[in-house]
Length: 418
Image (cartoon, rainbow, N blue to C red; front, side, top):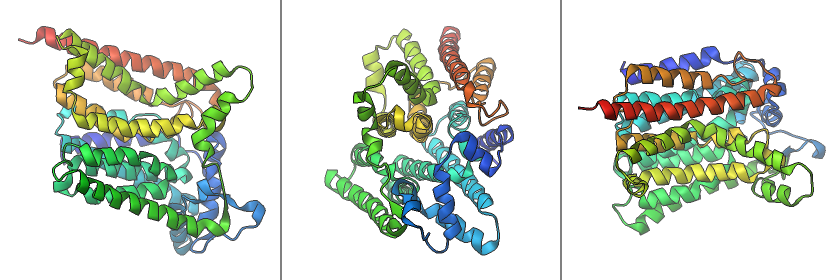
């Protein structure tokens, strides 16, 4: 077994050992995961479909994610395994798919051992990536979406000549089965399939035709699911998710600035380590004589294409607005983490960052990232939401320190370089 795989398994083991394992109902109550009631209704009805009175119909934004709860319920009802256990098994399985896909992405990029370790640590130990789903496994549909999304990215990185198209197609179908907002990243997918480094060889028309196959397949699955769920669902908040911020902004109320600042912090905190470290790396490169224009021009095209995915999923999360998404916006932003890791690794590889770090610097990074993973509600710190501000402040401080370590570690390396 190679070193990188062992490192990843070690990180996963630490994550599992330090997570707070709540009972099924505790997780729902503490983390306010009301969506799970719809998923459990579907699971208990499997292998049939729910038969509900008008007042009990499920919102379509929940019932459209019926496939995995339906399969989990079918297996549970056929084997005698509890529904709660099947949701946990499914969650662990799809979390493993995310880790596997990102592992393969990093191998495709041929990053160094140190770059691999750092990138994988930032994924696995991000407090918003996996911990929430271990605490509330019935929210499995979110991680199904992320797993499909990660497979899409893997296909894009592999390119046409290495079976990338099949992975993109399969990943898109999996992601749309998990969450409807897979439709949000379709423009970014089109851009990569047209202009990506390993996708441009056959011309724009063929690229558009390939994208059309993926888009039509995903939409067809979405439409098919819509027909299946029609008998037990009623229109939910699909439209509100895209207009919530505007409606909240024009509605009269007091204290909006304070609410907006909190909302903004919740949307940026998930990706904060990446941002501070990339900013510090840019400052280091600037001091090495590269202007910011040169730095930007030297960044590979695929980085910017990866950032389109991040922007699409971040934009979806942000547009929901504080009234609708305040409690869950950080989780929605976390869906973009595989793309953020991809972009981060591309930059590390291009500029040879973290290529040969001192043990002391690596230890500092390990401590900062590991401590930052201890979320106040999903680890041993407790399950009270009144600690949210304390956690946010500490996490921001840790991210800033990570930026300082990035800068000074590279600056010291350049000073001592023969």
